[in-house]
Image (cartoon, rainbow, N blue to C red; front, side, top):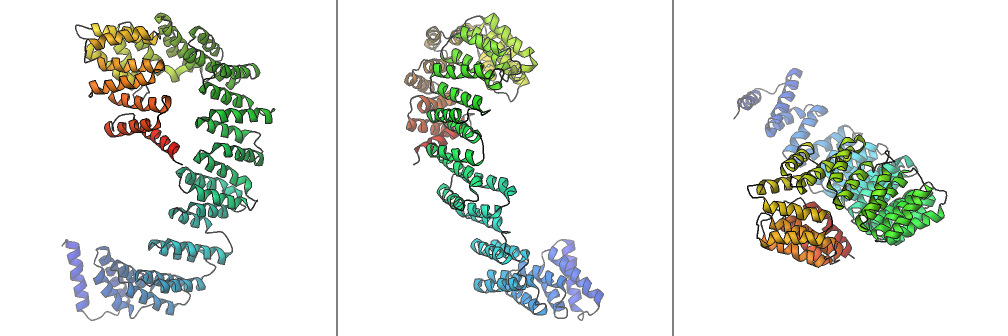
Length: 595
């Protein structure tokens, strides 16, 4: 036993070996001693001391509170109940005493008696909000949530207010009864629209969970039937349909939202962007056309045209997309949307139509708009165009220019990496190594750090006395960058045929990428599977597995195989950097497959 506790026990025994003390000083000292004993966990000794004093001082609330603490700690609930029943006799207006009696009765499994005690507390303090909160809290602490809800409803009724409506909503949330929670949130809001943001945020979080959407929808319908809150309910009603992916009926809802809020197309454009994110490109185009025809004077028309053009691009309707972009450029000159349209035409020419000369014209046009958010992107892309054309000096020059432009600072990392790539293609390995190290040191959390590290490992493993295969590899990668895919593939196969263990897995990966670029998706899957089979310890195995899943998901449209591939990635490569993306895709697949 520790010394202070030992001394306390001795003192306790000495006190009670003496005759029962009567002085006020000794009474106060004993209360302090009892509290000290409790603080040391010696509750029973403290209770014995306090009970002796209680016989003569039942009205001392400090003494009573100490006894309450001791009885609770020792689970002496019968004594606790009797103590506070006596307190109700001493002070009939002490509603808190009735609450404590009720709490003790719950712990004694006397729920009906507890209900009666709580009602007596309410009779004493019917107009005091605190009595309802304390009773509800006692029910909650004892795990009886439905009783807490009943008390809050009673409080609302007796006080003729909605003071507890938000508390009730929170409790319904805890019970996963989201429909009832939604109704109570709107009851809490009532006519006080300043509370809407808080209510909206809470209900949107429930919708986002994706549980009990039917209950939430029905609750919102019930609220809308009152007509007075339509304006506030409709955005949440639309969010339910968005969450379920029911976009067609949601379109009409967002028309109503826009009308109620006098949005002049704002809410409909928001919905169009959501449809675009959900890859519902045909519907997105329809919605944008509706905005263009219904709100001819709206300042949102340029944005609507931009979303429409991007949808056509995703549908691979490149002439249609370019036509929409050109409308923006012609009608909304010098606008942010016009700058974006110029850049996007360049992207179509470069990535899809493979016309680098045309692409360069559009990218160069962006340079006349330094305020554009695409200034750095355009400079990088001009460098990319020269690289595809095999003009490495010009490409290197443009990547260097990016690094000198303060307005392109957000693209410095990419420019430095691509400059190092040019050195790599040229066989200037020392210079390339320096460039990759610069990316790693200056951008430790950058998006090209892993690519730089891969190149550094490649160089350090293959820059020995015989760098023959490394030189062949750089030639192959350059041909691939120039889109000379057949020639690049021949060079990759040449390395594989020599069974170079340090480079063959990378060559297979690059061949798979070429096959994907050429639309040979099944061949690409086979090549990636060969990589995993022949080189199970390859650092590219996890990437190969992720690519297999993507090929099945996005290109071969085989959702079952895609799901299996992503699941295998999670199981076999749980520490890879692709895990989070695989989880997100699996979630999408499950949402697609669910009824």
